[in-house]
Length: 168
Image (cartoon, rainbow, N blue to C red; front, side):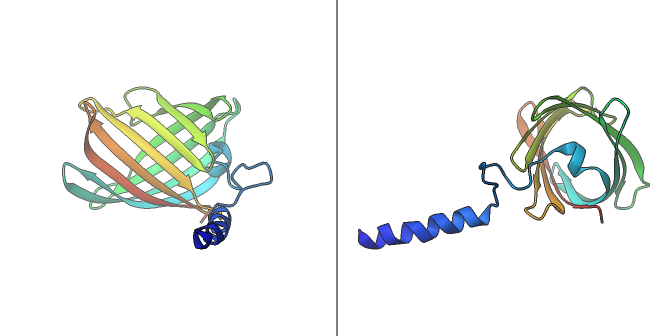
């Protein structure tokens, strides 16, 4: 029993050091979309739908418009296809809660940030599909891990995996 007691302190200390926090207990890099997506970013990833994987790249430019909203203009290129443009317009409704429009969505985007994570949910434009995305900001504030699940009537039929470099 003494061994467990003495091991617990170093393990707890290692866990605390692994995720940087401020003295108030909040993450050192909270996810604030207006700040995270300000400027240029580049993403590379894979979209898998019904077992078929397609590589893609995304070039983004985020700006704040007069209304205070974040406008994120993107050029998306799937391997072997021409680039296409899409635009996000993101509004903070209350602290940590967001709504958005996206040219690829069939309806409103709902988002929530908690710590260094932003979660998004929105209907896609085809066949009643719904996208659930989770973006995790790295501890150095320079990259995002973007993971998504595409569902049809609640059943997962696809996934998104992307690494986004901020201000490359």
